[in-house]
Image 1 (cartoon, rainbow, N blue to C red):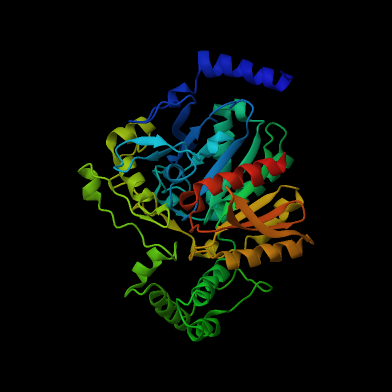
Image 2: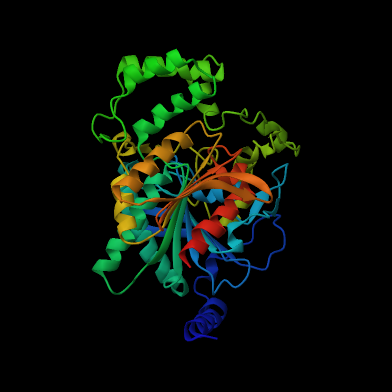
Length: 463
């Protein structure tokens, strides 16, 4: 046994077992299967004066937790719960079909890493503030809270301070993850008391250049015959104020004529009569959203809708499970006693996230991270109509060009003797993978492929 492993084992024995000051946060969830690893959850108080706190859920690796890395998972929105999201594809459990109990997730990421899920920003999941102005937030304040969270979390769990660290996330985490990673790198340069051993990033269906991501939606719809080429070119004429070479953070608002033609095209693409209904369908251009009813779950009935091998009702069941009082109590969550029903995304917390921040170009931040030799893996579902892979791949190619990275791989990748998608490798640090048959939420729609990407193209790549 090496010196580092010896001291990790000694610390775990002394402080994780006997003294165990953090064992107050150790939990067992209602009707969960028997497991051999520990799980913890609770609050980290970011600003006690303002009453601002972030909620977390930490899961040890299934085996050899002292030797494996720590991975942070952040979910986008902005306004979705990372903790709730852990139950739809990458955490240790998924709900039973009636949502009253849990079962083992065979594709859990804690097979290869310790996992930490954080509800961010304030107003998502069970994270909250007693100061109403904290709900008027954006990228800067969210990132500042996350940095404070990490310093305090490592004080609570110091055994993980020097672990290899990965930061991963989906959708609007295309902002959260790079900003946090960049802050940790700067933090390393400014202090010697704590150093974050950042080894890599993984971004699923990330929002990187919002205006171009939106335009790419209609390019995808036109390529699939969901709208006409004439309608698509009309959108380009009315809305295409920028391209990959002249992206601007300014003027985030679309013109009225642009919004009109986009709304018409969106309703046409999904054959519905309202923009709100069409927006719900963008995340999967092949499958309809779940039609299950909460009344059925209350009655103990099963709620499933499997289309093309994907159960579209998983998020609905998670919302139900998290809404049960005994679950909230076991989690040490909802200590403010929410006056509204739990929802994994966009609950009625009063969160008002900066629209201007959503339009900020993330490529310069990614460039700075790559300049620090931190690998980045980006993956996209081929059936994602919200942040289409055709747009994201262009961003990646632009990023590679700016970094003078040459294309070293352009090939199909396989998983379990089936085609998994397309793999592009730029230099040694930048990877893009499309995932065949996956929608916007790759870990939900293709959990086995998601674990494969994480294990073989994120963790293994940095070894």
